[in-house]
Length: 127
Figure 1 (cartoon, one colour):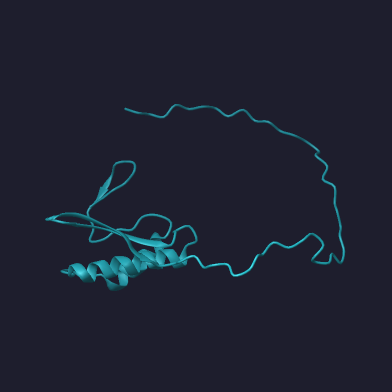
Figure 2 (tube, helix red, strand yellow):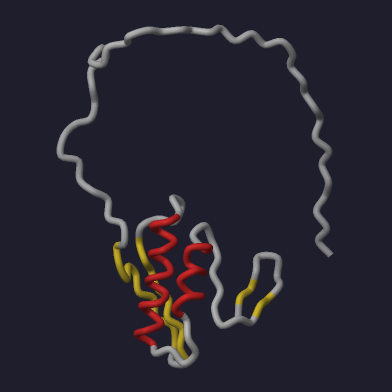
């Protein structure tokens, strides 16, 4: 079951949400099957999250799982560090003048007109 921010619900075999959801959905559509075991399910979710991580720049780098069974809820954090940050071996700060400037062309910007439009405030319906 999925509950959306505006309150609607869906009952589906699987659902993905968030910035990496398209890549994750592709993995679910390819690999999901009914009666999947717990360990197969963890691997499937790991693969789906990793697809989001590696195919979407806004999806972070850590795979965290929340396993919900009849026995209870288990949070596994982190399940895997899919995209570890590398170590810098050198300093990448260069002194001014290190790179030669072969030519420069500065174009001044002239403001021809400034337009200010009032924004109408409309109250959100809450009933």
